[in-house]
Image 1 (spheres, rainbow, N blue to C red):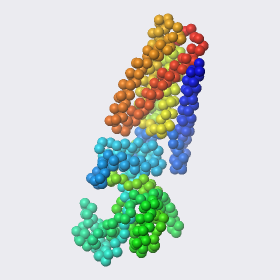
Image 2 (cartoon, rainbow, N blue to C red):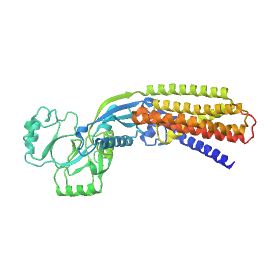
Image 3 (tube, one colour):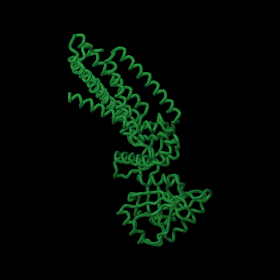
Length: 477
C-alpha cells in the first residue's frame, strides 16, 4: 500500500508541476499582441513558454552562405560554421527574439527563422554584418594629401569592381597604408576617404562590452565600448605613444570616426560616433557585443511569412486536433467502457506532460512538430489498446480481476516496447539527417513517445491498482 501511495503522489506531483510550467505560457498567449509587444520590448517575456514557429506566427526565413574562401586558413570549416551559428544566435538573442531556430544546412549554409520579424532589412543588417572592429592610425605622411586630392577629383569611387584601388590612385599611396571610405554623412554630402596605416594594434577581439550612450552636448546616440584587461593595457600604451594623432575606428572596412588622441587613455574605454539613429546604434552595439563572424555571409534565400497564414494554420490545427481527440475519446469509451475511460485519462495527461516539457525547454512549435505530437499521442493510445486487449483475453479465461491486470501489463509490455523502439529508431535517423522542420518533428515525436510510454504503462496501472483496493469482482472492458 505504501508503494501505491508513492506512485499516486509521484503522478499528482508531476501533474502539479506541469500546470505550474504551463501557466506562464497560457497567461502570455491570452494577452493582446500589443501587450505582448510592450513586454518583449521591456525584456519581460517569460523564458519557459512554448514558442510559435515561423509557420504559425509569421516572420522571416533566411538561408545564409558562409564565404569559406575568406576564412582564416588556420580555421577548420566545421569550427567556423559552429562559431558563425553561435555568433548569429547571440545577436538574435540580444535583439530580443526568443528561441530562434538556427541550424546548419549542408556544408556551408545556415538556416535562420525569425518568428514575428517581417522587417527583412533590419533582419539582414542584424545577422549579415561581419562586425570586424579595428583601431588604425590615420597616416600623417606628406604623400597623403596628393592621394586625397586625386580621389576628390574622380567622378566615381576610387575602387575597381574587384575591390582593389584604381592604378592611378594605387601608385600615389604611401607605403604600408590603405584607402578606407568613411561612413555616409548627411544626405547629399560627398563621400569622404581616409588613408590609414596597415598596422592594426587592436581589434574587436579585445572588446568586453558595447552599449548605447547619448552625447551630452548634442543628444545624439553613440556607442560606448569597454575593452578587456589585456586590450585596455594595449590601448593605453598605444594612445600614450601616439598623442595628437588621429585614431580611426574602423568597422567592416568603413571608418566610423577618427578622433584626435589628446592624451593617454587609461581604462580601456571609448566611444564610436556616427550618424546613427537610436535603433541603428542599438543594433550595432548588439553586433559588437556578440563578436565578429569568422567570414562574411551572403543571404541566398529570403522568405517572409505573413501572420495571417499562421493564424489560419493554428485555427485549423486546433479544430482538427479537437475533433480527432473527441472521436478517439468517444471510441474508447464506447468500445472499452471503463477501460477506455482510463485510457482517455492517460491520453489527456500525455498531452499535458508533453506541453509542459516543451514549455520548460522553451521549444519552438511548428506544423511538423504538431504532426510529431499527434503521432506520439496515437502511439500512446495504441499502447492502451494493446493492454486492454490483453485484459479481454485474460478476462475471457475467467481469471480473478486482481490477476488479470498485472498479467495483461506483463504480456503487453514486449509489444509496446517493440513498437516504440522501432519508431524511436526512425526518429533518430530523421534528426540526424533531416533539416530544421524535420528535426523538429523528430524531437517532438521522441519526447512524446517517452511520455506516452510513461502514461500508458505507469499512470494507467496506478489507476487500476488504486481501483483494486476496493476488491472489485468485475472488469468493465
